Amino acid sequence: MRPTTALSRQGVAIWLDDLSRRRLDSGDLAQKVDELDVVGVTTNPAIFQAAITGSDDYAADIARLAAEGADAERIVRELTTEDVRRACDLLRPVWEATDGQDGRVSIEVDPRLAHDTDATITQARELWAEVDRDNLLIKIPGTPEGLGAIRQVIADGISVNVTLLFSVTRYREVIDAYFTGLEDRVAAGQPIDQVSSVASFFVSRLDTEVDPRLADLDTPQARALTGTLAVANARAAYGAYLEVADGDRWQALEEHGANPQRPLWASTGVKNPDYPPTLYVTELVAPGTVNTMPEATLMAVAAAPAVTGDSITGNLDQAEATLAGLGEVGIDLDEVTDLLEIQGVAKFEDAWNGLLATVDAAR
Image (cartoon, rainbow, N blue to C red):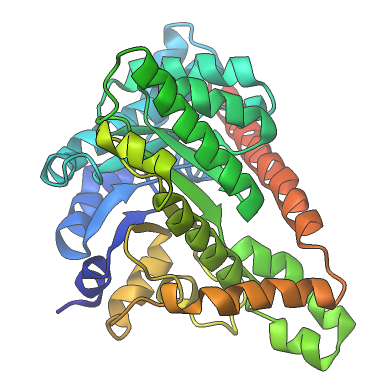
């Protein structure tokens, strides 16, 4: 059995964290679906910036749209929604075969709207209508302002990928927003069985931020924690997911046909070359999860020994102890995750602004 198939059979949905015109035109994405068990695709502003500015594949469309009088924002919207639409069509057989659980493609609202609830709702509706595919997910940042947008968009019947999550506390708020949106929809007499959601935890960035702080402390306890916090935090999030799944509120929604909001592990490429390239895959295996991988991580998984079991559920107590240990050495996890959220939004804003500037120059 190929390693990616073994991972899938453990209940982990493999999504590719990348999309480009070249992947679509060359058949590369289709090949990964057929040969590496890829059942979904995620995008973000940085991915689109790399795709559009890093090749000539979009030059003809940029020239055509410019000739029609489109500004840079309109051109970027046209290019990105077209790629996502094509990916949705390619993955539709997977969506149908999995009853809508997988075969999903994500597109993100403008990251500059991350702190504007109403504008996020408006653009989420526009993107949903413009792509016009049932297997689309609209990515909304899990900021405080994003919570209200998530609730309303779910109530509208739009499927959502909640992105830029770093803390378990915020994840619980996201779960509440998802549930409340579904409850609003039920109260309005609308079906909820076609509404889907994932909650995306950015994993590697936690180790990237915390490891240098631990190194500065240079104590045995700090050294023992190095490289462990990202996995522990994600495992604690899965513990919250299991806790909610046993609750009365979820059971009531499930009776109406609700789909669980699966935890999704994002930013799973290791940043520290001393760590195994599959660290944030093999240590985060459990049923009902999604792992969205950059290509390098996907290929490392495909070349590694097959995963043979759940690596989360039996380690939940250890995860909590690890998180507690961070506080014991004087590092405030809440401060770290708040900082990472701010940085995450800023990085996507920078990527989006860079993309707009490049397209405007080309236009």
